[in-house]
Length: 329
Image (cartoon, rainbow, N blue to C red; front, side, top):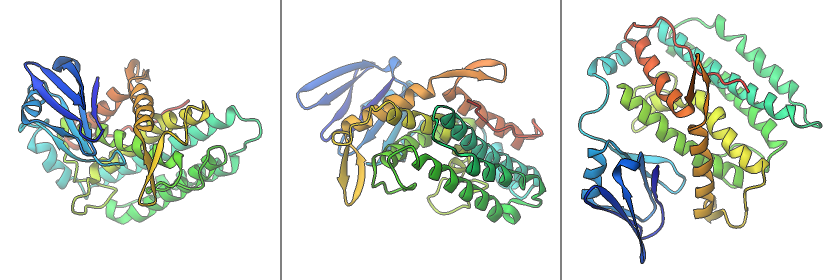
């Protein structure tokens, strides 16, 4: 289970092998062995004893801002993987093999967007996404002809990603209450999507670190101080099947209360306590949903970790090709 510390004045302490969660006069005890992750946001706090207990039990601690985006984590001093993996991230960067990996990730993202649109269109008589879908599929036809290093093809790849994203969100805006994709949300859909992406970001970053990858040494997204470019690369193939599906379902099933689930801060819409609870529940359920994947029944969460390990195998030369995650509804 997750322990979410997200209300003003909340405090997480420790007693023996149990966490003590205090919220005003209320107190709750949770056995450490039952906790998989601790998420701390807003004006709440955690004791050093609770941090040590989490480390002893291998529990991930994530610190997030108002929008649900992680800005720090607490890990044991010994991380996953080896220095060899990180070294290969740097030395393999100019290779054509890595350029092919990046092309496959972009293809996976666009195909997942296409499959999402086709899935939504099936259940709506008066909606037709064919023009957008066809234009996105034509874009993908350009990928095999792109040759060169990542630096040489980056702008073209980002152009495909950007155009496909515009088409995708334009189609979604025809059936959901928003006009365009915004990182600083002014509408409920973008606010929930942003929070969900923050959760996915945390999941992907954890998978990268456990696999031994350097979160800040990416390939498609250029290196910039403080920017976890590897996480931003790796997250792309999971947005639609995990977060988009979870958030869209909340709106389609009319489970969103626009008055109670949101609040405004500096002209930006964020989630209230009830809004966070809904998104957390929906995304976590999606992460733990099991599907058929390469001959086995596994959860989306496990797939994220498996894909990170697969990428490492490509880096180390144990695999010739990176097979991205493409989800067909």
